[in-house]
Length: 251
Ligand code: MF3
Ligand code: CO
Figure 1 (spheres, rainbow, N blue to C red):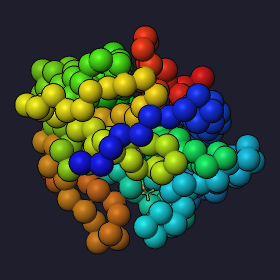
Figure 2: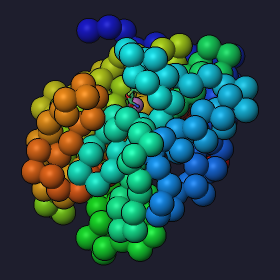
Figure 3: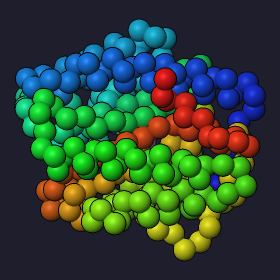
């Protein structure tokens, strides 16, 4: 298994800066979500926001991905490609996953929003998914083990009867968007690596109302819930310290 990088004080400062810029991008993006907007328009705004703050979109052209943000609607789990003819409507839920590079350092974060008024079932899925992230980072402390995070997320989600997506996981992040380790959101029997101060992790539960099984659409990117149930995603880039973890992509 590849080693997990430990960031130096200088690198941590740059990761903080990168994360703060991305948090602001998300804050602005949240304001454009409304019935009638196309997912392509969201991408255009996102790319402008990232470049406008001195960042570079890290999703754009990543393994050929054609946009700066993944916009995943309803049963789409992740990696929805923005399109002019995909128009958000009242009652949809939409996940925005985006990231940027600032002076060589990557940040990555995702949020799920309701479009206009959404059902209580959808509200609850979004809230449980978000809360599961906070349950997870509670364990992101030096001296604990990686899979304490995974198990905390799973222990919180499973009693709700939701399906945890297994085929996609969180990841280390730094000079690349994806570094070791992989961070599963489902129960683990092994402890995983020991966490150390200076590790930077993108923790990202992806949760479906139905089962956690997923399928890939023919566009080669979009991942959907196999049973077409609603899916939510919540992600932040986090710094492990000797004390409380720092969430780099929240203001
Ligand atoms: N945000 C995804 C992750 O968390 C990566 C998306 S890659 C892209 O790992 F190409 F789809 F943008
Ligand atoms: Co990620």
